[in-house]
Length: 478
Ligand code: ADP
Ligand code: MG
Image (cartoon, rainbow, N blue to C red):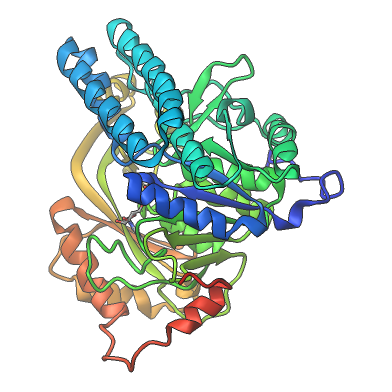
């Protein structure tokens, strides 16, 4: 990330009062959710919001399914999926918009879906689909804003976020992106309008659409926030904020009120999907606080992520990354440094990012998230090393700035799960985490036990003073 250029504060001296508000799929899943979003944005109007929005909930997954069906020659089922998606968008639009607005949006909707049908006929790759439908949620939202009296302006994110050509995992070209974001969004903001952009998409210099990877709308919000030097970046989602663990996994998961950029980045990297791992980098670089908040429960002040926190909490959160495979590379002779380099090169050539690497005299182990290219990698290393892998593993990770100061944490962790088979224990690569590998089937149990250990259920508290949350947020939502 060292290539992120420093922003020129003087060149853009109006900056301190912009807020980027990103809404995830569940925050715009239906008409009621979109109405809530309109209200939230209206209430933040004095901060000059810029809105970034994902596709409607589950749309991306369904498009991927349609793409795969098309690839397998099942065009009819792919088209059925598209038809259901078209209907869903049309129904949500009908509920929110006046007849004229509805007509105007629907003609755009028809065009987008016609294009998708053509794509089904001609291509099979999943990534090609997403950008076109991503537009629909942002267009729908800007229409809904207008209908609710907010001066919205739909912005084509591809005009703003300029990336390299690595489709599905594109990286922004920062200088150009910053310039574009400023030149497209500033005039709108200066005339009091609320720009609305689809997340997740960008384009190359030549205008070819690209995508930033799953969950990439968080990243889009951070890119825009950093380009404008926003006062804060708000990630609005379906949970109260970053929690001590995934609330789907553990009912006792608690809200974390404040955490550092490093802690949040570590957590995102190690599987907490509440934040896309790349989100924090631009925010960190420009020291812009990131808030994670619940669009269904705006009374809750959420999680504030900032450069430093001063609390004494040793373990802040526990994450789990499933679907991991551990790969053992055993050299036929010995593990020479050249072999380590060669192994890393081979994985890179096959576009693998290695999650964790551990080496001993006799072998090298790495973690990967997909096994697709492993047979090819094994073949390339033939004659140098034997490659074996084990699927269905999960990486459990404890995160906290203070972990480094508490050597007893590791022993408490492994005592609590002493009957669970643990591999690839790693502490110290980053001082902020302890991570280890377990069988995927044991991950939930391990996380729950560790959560009980570090976050024992609280005794019943006297009634919470919710005005505290309201004060912190500086808002009244009633
Ligand atoms: P969005 O559609 O708003 O981007 P995501 O589904 O990507 O939302 O992320 C929110 C989800 O992340 C939550 O519903 C929750 O299940 C999951 N999650 C995983 N780990 C955590 C965590 N530590 N704190 C909060 N949510 C988490
Ligand atoms: Mg997300």
